[in-house]
Length: 545
Image 1 (spheres, rainbow, N blue to C red):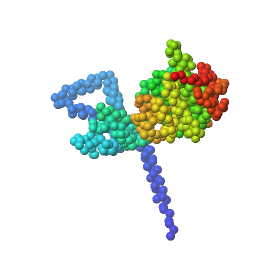
Image 2 (image 1 turned 45 degrees about the horizontal axis):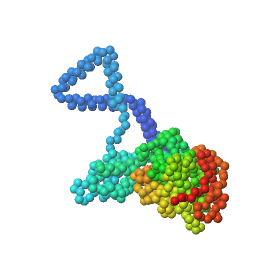
Image 3 (image 1 turned 45 degrees about the vertical axis):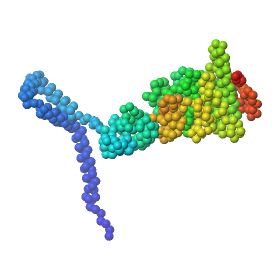
């Protein structure tokens, strides 16, 4: 049976109703806009009347008569003044408009969702911060969370950004394991993916948690305002260090808090070890250190990875050699060991006769090793000594000889580092995502912040000797020959590179008492650069005594 179409009045009725509603809504909005001043003044008059009524009710009965007489006298005076009633009406309308204005709602406490979050966090802390023997526990199931939590704040997403917690005195806040449990719980309940700072006040039994903002990644390689012997490793939080340096960032010039590493004879951390995941920025850190060291010293680069990350330094003034092969690395490190001994002997002889230390022994020498474990594996396969064995003299006596060693390695090869390297590299850096156990194994202490799973290149933690663990962002120092490098960063690195010098090949003498290496020839010997203030590698001087 065919369906008969609906009458026209029924099929078009819904559209007419919707159109009528839209017209009515538009008319109401227009009327509201036109009558908005009148609505505001009416609301203000109601508030003024309510205030006057409350004042009259609060006035004692014996004072109402004099108050009424005073009001009547004021009205009489205004009535006889020129333009008095008009001015009084204008003043009344102005006061009503001010009282009736729309004021922003001031939040005086947490809303329902925030209260639910605080209650859930309170209940989760009960098993860790309470004891059955406590007669008046601060943390108890179904207890009052407001007695334990204070100074709390939430971000736009409704997650905690700041919280202060009072805990009972019997909590073992002096044990790192107990602290780690509380920090891990707060991190999980407050929202992952953010970096939290935990400040423990053991005297006041109070824990304060803050959400840290990300460190800026807009600072590239540049000339930093430092003195010889100081190296800017990166930048950290403003309240973590007391020194700032002027830098050029993407949004202009600013003073940034810097992590400054001091080297030389008076340094307590003369050598550095950087560990990270692949792509975390350890090689960029070595490039940044090399660019800062070249204006005042000589640099010897040993690249174990063989990827050509330091090709931009080849032939530059102050760069003694850039070695990627095993033979060249062994020869260069052997020379570095003899050079350290020569400097010590020369300085000792000068002091014995009362002369100043020779100039060539006071110029800093930097030995940069990137992934020495790869060279160690090749040396073991070829039956040759591990290059790390040749670092014993520079590591042990480098501080007095103005020799600084910087080693960069990856986490999967940390076990291959020699014991001498682990012992004498007191300045430590961890870059890239890493667990708390990995960070503690390198730095010797846990950071006061929670590591995040995703980090930009150059982001990590630094610890100089026995100092605190600091967040770190290494200045962007990419390879200028890499196609993926931006033009701004490429130009920033190229501007810092010294001028190229004419290469001269010098024969490297074998160690005293050893036979010449048949695998070492003019192609594998270190290429020496002779620049302003630099000298060619001298022949090794046998150590006396």
